[in-house]
Length: 409
Image (cartoon, rainbow, N blue to C red; front, side, top):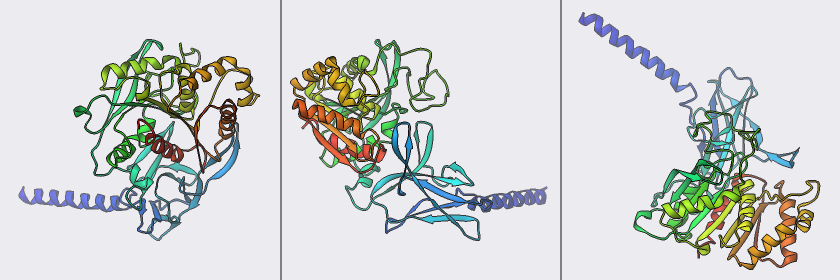
């Protein structure tokens, strides 16, 4: 019996050893990506039966193409080379400090990096991510977790009587929140296809705020990130709709319009926050900003409630008002007396900061230029930032970092 038991144990060990040997080359044990000391990055994948392997990501020069929304950019691609063990590799050029996303394309099929557990979801697309940093305080450093006091991130449900549903939002409270009092609030809004998870995952909000607050560059504040899809309660999989497939600009209930718009329902959010958190109330303690659709929501909400926010940030904003869509945004503004009156009231209320930022190749660039032309002609003051690149998270993280340093001073 003892001899049989020893043989059984030995067989088990041999099986485990064989499994371990197989796992070593299964792809999960290949190190990828590796950020090298010179800031080049090496990507590797074990794919011995593959014919062609590529990597695509925003660390490569973008490729421009025409779309229904105008000229847009998509990440470039690079081919990997295979060694005798079936491991494919590619090493990039030195990369600037930043958070990057990428995928592999194996025999024409796009997949995640099986060796990289760090993943982001953007609408319905999953991508692997990595961070490059060279020194303290650079962009990569601001986007990563550092040894600084950390705030808390909570998923919070609130009642929206205007939309007639319970809804979920993400709330960041700064380190030391429990010991403090009367914090200002920044309302941070996502773009089309996003949800209340977008700014904390893709936007790195908690890391940005933790690091900038710790450096004394940003005043401790609460950051509220609501869901801007007015026919949804929460992010995909987080409400009773079930595990539906998220899509860009697609209504969850196409046969049923929302009972109200995001800007119409925004006081429900403010009311909940100011009754459940240690909030300094009043216009001077509120900021609203957002990217793309969220920039449009910030535009609409701030003009609808001119005495609600002292700080307004439009990041690559998708600006929408009623009228003939074949006309320019400047023409629509010139024809819409209601919007003109709303903007007049907003700027008469003298917000401390009206901030517009956009990339040079953003497909919404002309729309934002039309809006700035209108503001210039009316003499309405604003600050403007123009960056390289297009409609991308790399820009929006920059805009959040810059805008946060300008408010509540």
